Amino acid sequence: MTNLISKIRFLPITIFAAVLMLTVKIGNIWEGVDVMMNGSISVSDAVAQEKPKEKPQPKQPAAAAKPATAKPSTIQLEEGSQPAPGSSGGDDGRMAGDPSQAGLLSKDPTLLTQAEIDLLQKLAERRDVLDGRAKELDMRVALMKAAETRIDKKIRELKAIERTIENLLAAHDQEQQKKTDKMVKIYQNMKPKDAARIFQELEINTLMLVVEKMSERKLAPIMAKMNPKKATEITVELSRLRQLPSPGDEDGGG
Image 1 (cartoon, helix red, strand yellow):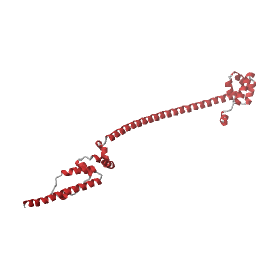
Image 2 (image 1 turned 120 degrees about the vertical axis):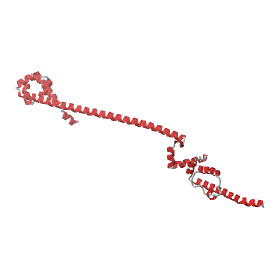
Image 3 (image 1 turned 90 degrees about the horizontal axis):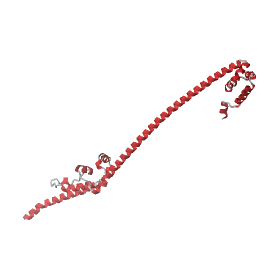
Image 4 (image 1 turned 90 degrees about the vertical axis):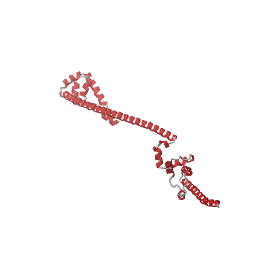
Protein backbone atom coordinates (compact mmCIF):
# COMPACT_ATOMS: atom_id res chain seq x y z
CA MET A 1 0.00 0.00 0.00
CA THR A 2 2.83 2.39 0.82
CA ASN A 3 4.57 1.53 -2.44
CA LEU A 4 1.39 2.22 -4.34
CA ILE A 5 1.00 5.59 -2.68
CA SER A 6 4.64 6.49 -3.40
CA LYS A 7 4.18 5.43 -7.02
CA ILE A 8 1.06 7.55 -7.26
CA ARG A 9 2.90 10.55 -5.84
CA PHE A 10 5.97 10.21 -8.03
CA LEU A 11 4.01 9.52 -11.21
CA PRO A 12 2.77 13.11 -11.71
CA ILE A 13 6.23 14.44 -10.97
CA THR A 14 7.76 12.07 -13.51
CA ILE A 15 5.16 13.00 -16.11
CA PHE A 16 5.69 16.69 -15.43
CA ALA A 17 9.46 16.33 -15.77
CA ALA A 18 9.07 14.40 -19.03
CA VAL A 19 6.72 17.04 -20.42
CA LEU A 20 9.14 19.76 -19.35
CA MET A 21 12.07 18.03 -21.04
CA LEU A 22 9.98 17.45 -24.15
CA THR A 23 9.05 21.13 -24.16
CA VAL A 24 12.70 22.12 -23.87
CA LYS A 25 13.62 19.75 -26.70
CA ILE A 26 10.84 21.12 -28.89
CA GLY A 27 11.99 24.67 -28.10
CA ASN A 28 15.54 23.75 -29.05
CA ILE A 29 14.39 22.14 -32.29
CA TRP A 30 12.24 25.16 -33.17
CA GLU A 31 15.09 27.50 -32.34
CA GLY A 32 17.46 25.50 -34.55
CA VAL A 33 15.01 25.70 -37.45
CA ASP A 34 14.64 29.46 -36.95
CA VAL A 35 18.41 29.93 -36.84
CA MET A 36 18.90 27.88 -40.02
CA MET A 37 16.28 29.97 -41.81
CA ASN A 38 18.16 33.11 -40.84
CA GLY A 39 21.52 31.65 -41.93
CA SER A 40 23.14 31.89 -38.49
CA ILE A 41 24.33 28.43 -37.49
CA SER A 42 26.88 29.83 -35.06
CA VAL A 43 24.23 31.52 -32.91
CA SER A 44 22.06 28.41 -32.78
CA ASP A 45 25.03 26.37 -31.54
CA ALA A 46 25.74 28.99 -28.88
CA VAL A 47 22.09 29.03 -27.76
CA ALA A 48 21.96 25.21 -27.72
CA GLN A 49 25.03 25.19 -25.49
CA GLU A 50 23.53 27.76 -23.14
CA LYS A 51 20.10 26.10 -22.75
CA PRO A 52 21.16 23.00 -20.74
CA LYS A 53 22.70 25.29 -18.13
CA GLU A 54 19.34 26.86 -17.32
CA LYS A 55 17.45 25.40 -14.37
CA PRO A 56 14.01 24.05 -15.16
CA GLN A 57 11.16 26.13 -13.82
CA PRO A 58 8.27 23.83 -12.87
CA LYS A 59 5.92 26.72 -12.16
CA GLN A 60 6.26 28.20 -15.70
CA PRO A 61 6.33 25.32 -18.18
CA ALA A 62 4.55 27.36 -20.87
CA ALA A 63 7.26 30.05 -20.86
CA ALA A 64 9.94 27.46 -21.51
CA ALA A 65 8.07 26.21 -24.56
CA LYS A 66 8.32 29.60 -26.30
CA PRO A 67 11.04 29.71 -28.98
CA ALA A 68 13.75 32.31 -28.80
CA THR A 69 12.62 35.18 -30.97
CA ALA A 70 15.64 37.46 -30.60
CA LYS A 71 17.73 38.02 -33.69
CA PRO A 72 20.86 35.85 -33.92
CA SER A 73 23.16 38.81 -34.40
CA THR A 74 21.66 40.55 -31.31
CA ILE A 75 22.04 37.44 -29.10
CA GLN A 76 25.61 36.98 -30.23
CA LEU A 77 26.55 40.58 -29.47
CA GLU A 78 24.75 40.69 -26.09
CA GLU A 79 25.86 37.29 -24.71
CA GLY A 80 29.36 37.58 -26.17
CA SER A 81 29.24 34.07 -27.60
CA GLN A 82 31.85 33.05 -30.16
CA PRO A 83 30.82 31.66 -33.57
CA ALA A 84 31.34 28.01 -34.31
CA PRO A 85 34.30 27.04 -36.53
CA GLY A 86 32.06 26.17 -39.47
CA SER A 87 29.98 29.35 -39.34
CA SER A 88 32.57 32.01 -40.30
CA GLY A 89 31.68 31.96 -44.01
CA GLY A 90 28.01 32.76 -43.43
CA ASP A 91 28.76 35.52 -40.94
CA ASP A 92 31.25 37.14 -43.32
CA GLY A 93 28.71 37.05 -46.13
CA ARG A 94 26.03 38.71 -44.01
CA MET A 95 28.45 41.32 -42.67
CA ALA A 96 29.62 42.15 -46.19
CA GLY A 97 26.05 42.50 -47.41
CA ASP A 98 24.84 44.51 -44.42
CA PRO A 99 25.88 48.22 -44.58
CA SER A 100 25.88 48.49 -40.79
CA GLN A 101 28.26 45.55 -40.47
CA ALA A 102 30.43 46.95 -43.25
CA GLY A 103 30.60 50.25 -41.37
CA LEU A 104 31.57 48.34 -38.22
CA LEU A 105 34.39 46.66 -40.09
CA SER A 106 35.61 49.97 -41.40
CA LYS A 107 35.55 51.53 -37.93
CA ASP A 108 36.94 48.63 -35.91
CA PRO A 109 40.35 47.48 -37.23
CA THR A 110 40.33 44.51 -34.86
CA LEU A 111 37.69 42.81 -37.04
CA LEU A 112 39.93 42.92 -40.15
CA THR A 113 42.01 39.95 -41.22
CA GLN A 114 45.75 40.15 -41.73
CA ALA A 115 45.29 39.98 -45.51
CA GLU A 116 42.86 42.90 -45.39
CA ILE A 117 45.24 44.88 -43.19
CA ASP A 118 48.12 44.21 -45.61
CA LEU A 119 45.91 45.24 -48.52
CA LEU A 120 44.96 48.49 -46.78
CA GLN A 121 48.62 49.20 -46.06
CA LYS A 122 49.55 48.60 -49.70
CA LEU A 123 46.70 50.83 -50.83
CA ALA A 124 47.86 53.55 -48.44
CA GLU A 125 51.42 53.27 -49.76
CA ARG A 126 50.14 53.35 -53.33
CA ARG A 127 48.09 56.44 -52.53
CA ASP A 128 51.16 58.15 -51.07
CA VAL A 129 53.10 57.36 -54.25
CA LEU A 130 50.29 58.71 -56.43
CA ASP A 131 50.02 61.84 -54.27
CA GLY A 132 53.75 62.38 -54.65
CA ARG A 133 53.55 61.99 -58.41
CA ALA A 134 50.58 64.36 -58.55
CA LYS A 135 52.53 66.97 -56.59
CA GLU A 136 55.53 66.51 -58.89
CA LEU A 137 53.33 66.91 -61.96
CA ASP A 138 51.73 70.01 -60.48
CA MET A 139 55.19 71.44 -59.83
CA ARG A 140 56.29 70.68 -63.39
CA VAL A 141 53.14 72.27 -64.78
CA ALA A 142 53.76 75.35 -62.66
CA LEU A 143 57.37 75.54 -63.89
CA MET A 144 56.24 75.14 -67.50
CA LYS A 145 53.66 77.88 -67.08
CA ALA A 146 56.28 80.16 -65.54
CA ALA A 147 58.67 79.39 -68.42
CA GLU A 148 55.91 80.06 -70.96
CA THR A 149 55.17 83.35 -69.25
CA ARG A 150 58.83 84.37 -69.42
CA ILE A 151 59.09 83.28 -73.06
CA ASP A 152 55.95 85.21 -73.98
CA LYS A 153 57.36 88.25 -72.22
CA LYS A 154 60.64 87.95 -74.13
CA ILE A 155 58.76 87.54 -77.41
CA ARG A 156 56.73 90.67 -76.69
CA GLU A 157 59.91 92.55 -75.85
CA LEU A 158 61.61 91.36 -79.06
CA LYS A 159 58.57 92.34 -81.12
CA ALA A 160 58.57 95.75 -79.47
CA ILE A 161 62.28 96.14 -80.28
CA GLU A 162 61.62 95.01 -83.85
CA ARG A 163 58.85 97.58 -84.26
CA THR A 164 61.12 100.25 -82.82
CA ILE A 165 63.90 99.36 -85.25
CA GLU A 166 61.48 99.32 -88.18
CA ASN A 167 60.14 102.70 -87.17
CA LEU A 168 63.66 104.07 -86.84
CA LEU A 169 64.65 102.67 -90.23
CA ALA A 170 61.52 104.08 -91.82
CA ALA A 171 62.19 107.45 -90.24
CA HIS A 172 65.81 107.32 -91.36
CA ASP A 173 64.85 106.39 -94.91
CA GLN A 174 62.27 109.13 -94.98
CA GLU A 175 64.78 111.65 -93.70
CA GLN A 176 67.38 110.44 -96.19
CA GLN A 177 64.85 110.70 -98.98
CA LYS A 178 64.09 114.26 -97.98
CA LYS A 179 67.78 115.12 -98.05
CA THR A 180 68.22 113.47 -101.43
CA ASP A 181 65.23 115.29 -102.89
CA LYS A 182 66.60 118.52 -101.54
CA MET A 183 70.01 117.89 -103.14
CA VAL A 184 68.35 116.97 -106.45
CA LYS A 185 66.47 120.27 -106.49
CA ILE A 186 69.67 122.15 -105.70
CA TYR A 187 71.66 120.55 -108.53
CA GLN A 188 68.82 120.89 -111.00
CA ASN A 189 68.64 124.61 -110.30
CA MET A 190 72.39 125.06 -110.71
CA LYS A 191 74.10 125.84 -113.97
CA PRO A 192 75.21 122.69 -115.83
CA LYS A 193 78.87 123.75 -115.72
CA ASP A 194 78.83 124.27 -111.93
CA ALA A 195 76.93 121.05 -111.28
CA ALA A 196 79.33 119.10 -113.54
CA ARG A 197 82.34 120.39 -111.60
CA ILE A 198 80.80 119.16 -108.29
CA PHE A 199 79.79 115.81 -109.78
CA GLN A 200 83.40 115.27 -110.82
CA GLU A 201 84.48 115.32 -107.16
CA LEU A 202 81.72 113.13 -105.66
CA GLU A 203 82.06 109.39 -105.11
CA ILE A 204 80.07 107.23 -107.45
CA ASN A 205 77.69 105.87 -104.75
CA THR A 206 76.80 109.32 -103.46
CA LEU A 207 76.58 110.68 -106.97
CA MET A 208 74.18 107.95 -108.05
CA LEU A 209 71.76 108.83 -105.23
CA VAL A 210 71.35 112.27 -106.78
CA VAL A 211 71.61 111.36 -110.45
CA GLU A 212 69.02 108.61 -110.19
CA LYS A 213 66.42 111.09 -108.94
CA MET A 214 67.15 113.80 -111.54
CA SER A 215 65.16 114.13 -114.72
CA GLU A 216 66.88 113.29 -118.01
CA ARG A 217 66.31 116.79 -119.30
CA LYS A 218 68.24 118.31 -116.36
CA LEU A 219 70.92 115.59 -116.25
CA ALA A 220 71.97 115.66 -119.94
CA PRO A 221 73.49 119.20 -119.93
CA ILE A 222 75.39 118.43 -116.74
CA MET A 223 76.88 115.19 -118.11
CA ALA A 224 77.88 117.05 -121.29
CA LYS A 225 80.09 119.34 -119.18
CA MET A 226 81.66 116.45 -117.21
CA ASN A 227 84.83 114.44 -117.87
CA PRO A 228 84.02 111.75 -120.47
CA LYS A 229 85.36 109.02 -118.19
CA LYS A 230 83.14 110.12 -115.30
CA ALA A 231 80.17 110.52 -117.61
CA THR A 232 80.70 107.01 -118.95
CA GLU A 233 80.83 105.63 -115.41
CA ILE A 234 77.54 107.35 -114.55
CA THR A 235 75.93 105.97 -117.71
CA VAL A 236 76.96 102.38 -116.85
CA GLU A 237 75.62 102.66 -113.29
CA LEU A 238 72.32 104.12 -114.47
CA SER A 239 71.92 101.26 -116.95
CA ARG A 240 72.60 98.69 -114.25
CA LEU A 241 70.14 100.24 -111.82
CA ARG A 242 67.38 100.39 -114.42
CA GLN A 243 67.86 96.69 -115.25
CA LEU A 244 67.47 95.65 -111.60
CA PRO A 245 63.87 94.73 -110.63
CA SER A 246 62.22 96.88 -108.07
CA PRO A 247 61.02 95.36 -104.74
CA GLY A 248 57.40 95.61 -105.91
CA ASP A 249 58.19 93.67 -109.10
CA GLU A 250 59.88 90.89 -107.09
CA ASP A 251 56.84 90.48 -104.83
CA GLY A 252 54.45 90.43 -107.77
CA GLY A 253 56.53 87.88 -109.66
CA GLY A 254 56.71 85.51 -106.63
